[in-house]
Length: 317
Ligand SMILES: NC(=O)c1ccc[n+]([C@@H]2O[C@H](COP(=O)([O-])OP(=O)(O)OC[C@H]3O[C@@H](n4cnc5c(N)ncnc54)[C@H](O)[C@@H]3O)[C@@H](O)[C@H]2O)c1
Ligand SMILES: O=C(O)C[C@H](O)C(=O)O
Image (cartoon, rainbow, N blue to C red; front, side):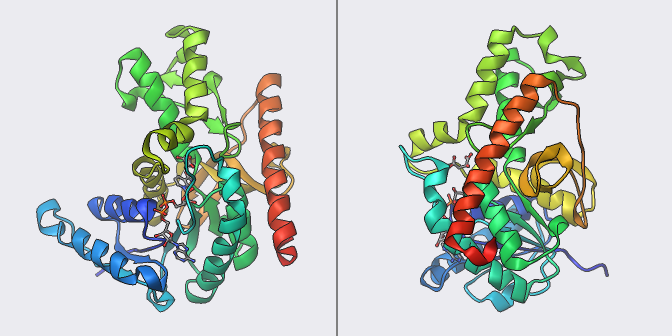
């Protein structure tokens, strides 16, 4: 019998528990969700509750809550959601001092207990946390990737579909850059069932969708007092599915770029081909002058955040 995939999620809060829910409902494999010892009963309870959906929702898999890293052994994918979320009035960057320490310690445990896993980082500020996980694990760059673009492009597609009154399924779009408010949605690479979006919407309306997508995380924080979790987890599980089913999907992801896009050795959002080996290829597309300028600005912001990581943990430089 073929072995089931094993998906571990570190951090069983809003995003982590939602990842488990999407992964179970899609029957992607066995699921382990790990939280700190003080949250062990809570995470065990959440995962038991989820398991008890299985007769109704019709999925067969093991689902476990734990605080013991031994339970993540042999994971195919480990998703890192551990860390604090922002509150109204905060930027993602304000989380760095706390989350760099959490992601560093979590990554050391992943290195020890699941050295073959593909690691998908979610904690914010995303691009700097992916860098932290890369340095702390010492894993090859294909084995470390961040989730942001899958979410950001989903938001952008949602807003375009709402504006046009068409199915979201018919909106294809692309987005580059860091997971900050300076991310770079690309109208020139946005189409509606193959029809360039500019033929169907005015520049003004397209720009309104772009701007709303850029601050889409903040819009939810303002409404809820904490950050989003359904759509972020959905983005994560789209990536997990591509990896565990070796689908070779192209998904905007925070991937390691050196020569690509002239990034020079940082993780930023780019179209990445995801399969069983993680990031198997980065797709480079042509950018015009304005798009390149926006991408360069976004990359500069990522570099500033990585500098904070290096200043906090000189051994991660
Ligand atoms: N990249 C994205 O698109 C994206 C989207 C949404 C949220 N996020 C980020 O994800 C993180 C989690 O958000 P959330 O809403 O789930 O927060 P949450 O507070 O609901 O959950 C975080 C969980 O992490 C746990 N945790 C803390 N330290 C830990 C450690 N050392 N080991 C294991 N678990 C630990 C906490 O106990 C908590 O259960 C935040 O940093 C948030 O900004 C990123
Ligand atoms: O906005 C946040 O802080 C969480 C996440 O990055 C998001 O975009 O929803």
